[in-house]
Image (cartoon, rainbow, N blue to C red; front, side, top):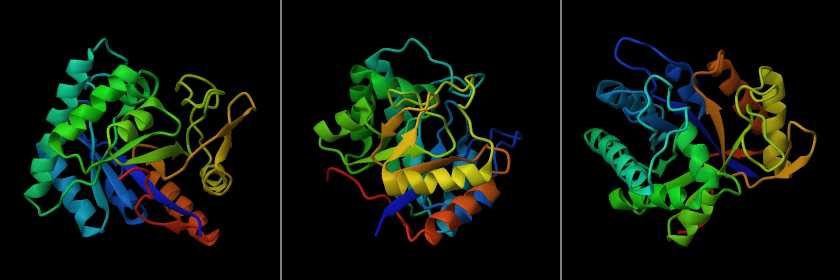
Length: 256
């Protein structure tokens, strides 16, 4: 039986500013990647989101980003590998402490936004992300873009890894996520996202925005909690996967 984890980026509200539909998405996912305060989130939001995930039986992971609240962590910055290692360890450690206070242990780490894309293509930054994770807990699973340098770095460091695919995002011919400003970079039809999610898991491939075929490893599929209609999208994707006979559960993983 085909199997896939369904994850969402959540906990991205800050103070009184509400962002995303965490309550609507949580019943349909199996892993939650929680913002750790640098690109979004704050201690109170982190605590509340861990509690929400725990109530729904969803595994909890850290979602560290670049220190860029204004740009929501989606703007690339000039950062050294040492800086990346430190900021990842700081954020993962912070969420691990908040989660421990509720009897929850982190299961994975998934970098956010620009940091995710930078680590996908830059081996030095990928190694720095992995070292930051290892500094907190070497049993954490590293979520990274399928076929990326981050997956390679995790495996070579002896950490478990889960290759991630995005049913609601466009791909370039080289297997990277298309920049959000390009036509086709973000899919708007929930039905199309559902169909593509099933095809990704079953066929291990996706059509790039130029029409070429990109081969993927798919251990976990990402949905974005801030997408308009996120809860309905999550419901449709979960239902579509299960109707196709695909087991939706915690990620199968490579490594440990």
